[in-house]
Image (cartoon, rainbow, N blue to C red; front, side, top):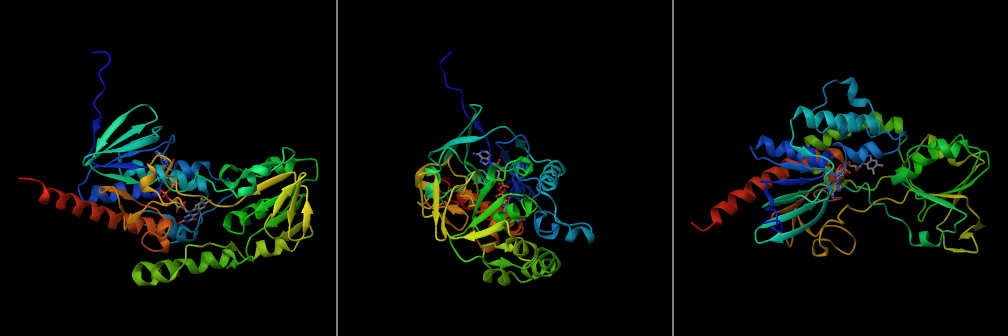
Length: 363
Ligand SMILES: Cc1cc2nc3c(=O)[nH]c(=O)nc-3n(C[C@H](O)[C@H](O)[C@H](O)COP(=O)(O)OP(=O)(O)OC[C@H]3O[C@@H](n4cnc5c(N)ncnc54)[C@H](O)[C@@H]3O)c2cc1C
């Protein structure tokens, strides 16, 4: 029968994405004797972190490890994105997780109480339970006016930026516009601190700064310990993150740096803003990301690009869960220290979900 359709492979639980959320959840399920299969689009677990900028450092290990931090000295070390990606690969190996790499989930449909997932290598899988852990990295957000950028000006999002080498080595004095006022914009300012170029920083709101990085590193272990000991503590925070104060504040006072308001319009190759108009050679966007949900049908996603949820579960597809979404449980839910906590709660939710399903099944 050459035309017969291949039957989909049956799997107990599928996790989409082998980032901190997918990996932490797979281990939490394993501890409850639930088997899961992770599908990962990249060549390795920790794929997002492999692609992040070379100079980017995460918060200290105490907040970024998804298992217990072994050495006290390590608590204070801020790993680079590459080191963190290696850590995630080691974590997956140590826990012998079942991961299939180079398998992007491209579409999902519902079939009674099951989900059929199609992957980029034309594999079809059928499961009663899916956990979407596809994160944000890889789905960059741009302002509306990106489509009006003239051909004479290059542009790049922080999502695709690796290091400043090319920009720093340019013989020409460039006019560079950085758009955004958060952590990524701060990282770009640090990278370009020693450049000879003229740098403009465009922000919609008044710039706000966090504590200097050294102070963040010093006080955060105590703060994270309090959050873990007293869960109510984490109800009062916000997931908004500002540029680190200290060095970045000083950089912005330098003669090569100018702060401007939002870009209002682009006409005749000129970018108009509240302090005049400028011709730029390069625009660097540090304008954030949206959830990676392009593989999902629109009924699962709100107009703002967030999954429509009740706690961890999709409102319209029972058995379809999410992890790592901003403010899902608390403001920490997008951050690794929130994810490692939420993963355990989600695993217990799934155990109960299967128990209730079996109780309600016809005898
Ligand atoms: C620049 C930057 C710096 C950050 N720094 C910190 C920090 O210091 N501390 C902190 O706590 N948090 C930080 N965060 C937040 C951070 O994204 C999360 O804490 C964490 O990476 C989220 O884990 P995740 O597993 O949800 O997403 P990710 O780490 O992005 O993992 C998602 C995985 O899903 C895979 N995937 C995506 N789509 C598909 C698909 N269709 N099929 C199969 N696989 C797919 C991706 O390849 C990826 O491996 C930072 C975020 C960014 C963007």
